Image 1 (cartoon, rainbow, N blue to C red):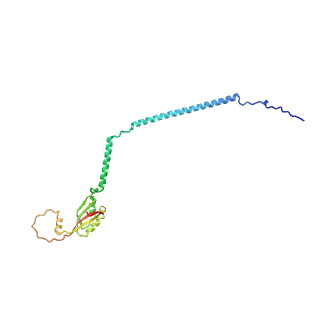
Image 2 (cartoon, helix red, strand yellow; image 1 turned 60 degrees about the vertical axis):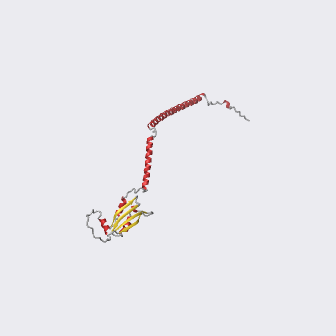
Image 3 (cartoon, rainbow, N blue to C red; image 1 turned 45 degrees about the vertical axis):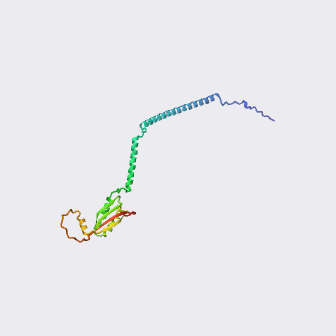
Length: 229
């Protein structure tokens, strides 16, 4: 019977040394070089930031200087008592003018628009055979009186109907109408009023009065909703 003898012993193998002096020196040199590079980069970054901060300080100082100059040039002025008094007086006058305007628009003191439109309305609505001898307008047109003559009494209602179509006569009603036929003597006196004085003559024989060829009328308006004027 054969027997094998193992003569291998691991302790007799050559051991491989990993951390020798040279690799450790190389690793240390690499670490030192990296630290130097990081230090240089950090210093450069710090320098750039310092330059930017200095530029920012200069910009802020320049803007503060400009702000100070603008504040001096456009400094708030003190309120002038004289100017404030003038403004207050102007406002009081304006308020008074507004009150006067409102008062005038109410028509208490009269017609602020004038009476020309009333006369235009009376002239536009002309009826042949009818003429006016007098017109009376009181206040703001609250009272309007019309006196005239007509060849026929039937022309008077026609004239009144036409007047009601005028915008300026809207809201007004002729509440009083008087019609009379003067005698011949009154008609002759009215026709010759502007002819001048006549020479004195002997008294003529009395003549019986006759009717004139026209009638006289008188109209008086009243505001709608009110009483007779």
